Amino acid sequence: MDLVKPEIGLMFWMILSFGIVLFLLTKFAWKPITKALNERDASIQDALDTAKRTKDEMVALKSDNEKLLVQARAERDLMLKEARDTKDAIIAEAKTKAAAEANKMIKTAREAINSEKNAAIAELKNQVAILSVDIAEKILRHELANDDKQKALMTNLMKDVNLN
Amino acid sequence: MTVNQNRKITVNQMLKPIFLTLLFNLFLGISFSFGENEGKKEGEEKFNAGETIMEHVTDNHSWHILGHTSLPLPVIIYSDKGVECFSSSKFEEGRLAVQGNYNYGLIKGHIRVIGADIKIDEAATAKIWDFSITKNVASLFIGITVMLMIFLSVAKSYRKNAGKAPSGLQSWIEPLILFVRDDIAKPSIGEKHYRRFMPYLLTIFFFIWVNNLLGLIPIFPGGVNLTGNIAITLTLAVLTFIITTLNGNKHYWRHIFAMPGVPLWVLPLITLIEIMGVFLKPFVLMIRLFANIMAGHIIILSFISLIFIFGDMAKWIGYSVSPLSVGFSIFMGTLELLVAFLQAYVFTLLSAIYFGAAVEEHHHPPQHHDTEQQAII
Image (cartoon, rainbow over all chains, first blue to last red; front, side):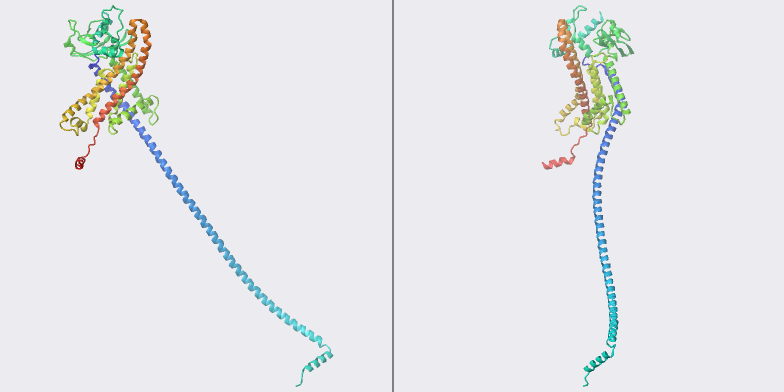
C-alpha cells in the first residue's frame, strides 16, 4: 500500500474507534478522574489552609495567654502589695491603740496610787498625832508623879513669871 | 505461480519510488538495487530489505507473524452491490481473483476489480470502498482496547480510593494525567478554558503514546506502524483542526482576517499567510508524527536488515555484523521509546497551543489610551 496516501478504510475505522474511545474515556475515565483530582487538590489546599489558620490561631492564643499571664502576675503583685499595706496599717493601728490603752491604764494606776498614798499619809499623820498626844500624856504623867517634881516645876514656872 | 513470487513482484513494483532508494542510501550508506532479485531461481532468492521493511511499515490485508505464517484478516468491501466480507486468506491461496460481487484481486496491496480480460477494471474499482480490517485497523483495535482497559480500571480505582492516596496502576497514570493537565493544558490554554479541552488532549496524548509503544513491541500483537501511518495522523490532525476552528472566538478570527495594528496595504498579504497558517498547522502536526514514527520503524528494521544483507554476501560477514546491528537496534529502540513519548507530548502540546490561540482573550488597550499616546507625541 502507498506510504503517503491515506486509506479511506483505515480513516473510517480510525474515526469510529477514536470517537468511541474519546466518548467512553471522557464519560467513564477523564471526567471522574479529573473530578477526583480536583477534589483531592481542593482538599489538600483546604487542609493546608486549615493548618495555617490553626497555626495563626495558636500564635494568637499564645500571645493572649502571655498577656493574661502578665496581667495575672500584675494583679497578684497588686493584691500582695495591698495585703501588705493592710497588714502594716492594722499593725500600726493596733500598736497606737495598745499604746493609748497602756497610757490610759498607767495614768489611772498612777492616779489610784496617788490617792492611796495621800490617804495613807493622812492616816499616818492622824496616827502620829494620836501617838504624840499619848506619848505626851504619858510623859506628863510620869514627870508629875510625886510632889517634889510638881513643886520644882511650879518654882521653875514661877521664876519665869515676873510680876512686872 | 506461488504466493511468494506473486507478492514479491507486486512489492518490487511498489518499491520503485526513488525517495526510498534515497532513504536507504541515507540510512545504510550502501547503494541497494531493488531489481536484483528478478530472474533469480526459485529458492535462491536473496533477502530483500526494502521489501521486508516496506511490508512492515505499510498497511496490509494480512498480519505477518513469523516466517511464512501470517494472520489472515477480514476483508470488508462496500460497493454499489452491497457489503461483502471474506477472509484475506482467499487472496493468498494463489488465486488470480476472489469471486464476489466483483472479481477482486490484491494488486500492490490494494484490492482491485479484475475485469474479464485479466486486467484491472478501473471503472468498477472506483465503485468499491475497502473497509477491511487491515493490519493497522486490527492494531488500532488492540490499542484502544489497551487504552480502555488501563483507563477504565484507573477510573475505577479513583472511585474506590476516593479521598485516599493513589495506588497501583493509578499512581503510575496519575502523574501523566497531571502532566497533561499542569504542563500542557493549563499553560497553553489558560486556567479559564482548559477544562473543556482536557478529555480530547488526554485522549490524543495516551492514544498516540500507547500506539507508539505498541508499535515498538517487536512480536505479534505489537510492532505495527500505526501512528506512522498517514491516515491515522491525518485523522488526528483534522480533529485538532476542527476543534480549533469550532472554538475560535472573535479575536482569533480577527487576528486571521484583520490583524490589528497592521497597515492596510500589508493586510492582504498577512491575511493570506494567516489563512495558510490555519491549514499548515494541522498539516505539520500530521507530517511530524507520521514521519517520526515511520522513520523510527525504518531505521530499526534497517539495522536488523543489515545482518541479512551482509549474510547474503557471505554467512560469516552476516554473523560478524550482527552484534553491531543488534547494538544499534537496541540503541535506536531506546531512542524510539523516548520519541514515542516525545511525539505524543509534542502533538498534544501543539494541539493545546492551537486551542489556546483560538480561545485566548486579547486585552487590547482601551480606546482612550490611543488618544493619550497621541497627545504625548
